[in-house]
Image (cartoon, rainbow, N blue to C red; front, side, top):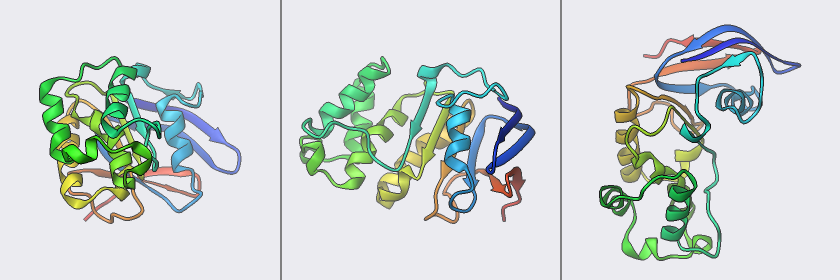
Length: 196
């Protein structure tokens, strides 16, 4: 559970006594409302004593709107590096999942020559690790991924949602293909938004 006792950032927000449990949340708000700043505090990337979590830093997956990779390595080498960074074994089962979103040719493509979708999927491939993450944050990460691969990643998010807190920020998707609650930021306050 994430418990925001008090989070005040001048001219941005003043949030008190807000709790977020396991499950999927779509975080909404206008540009500049503080969505990314809030997620930085929740994830622990920015320290604030008013946000209380029991997250282990190696159990937080925070992906933004750009891919994670080294330009002179192949897509596959970057995936291996990402898994190594989190001390996660790249099993045969996970490799089969990765091969479901990449072709062999794409896996052997240099990162700098890969499409935007290929690049962001390097980080998204970490979603294939079952029971690994306490917190997953996808801040505009899925916007460059095609519908077929998005469906695969959403299926993994659905499976993880029973024991993980997941935040998705998306300006391009009005509705997510997964059960979720919506949290909105407006006038510096957080609130649960009724969805239809």
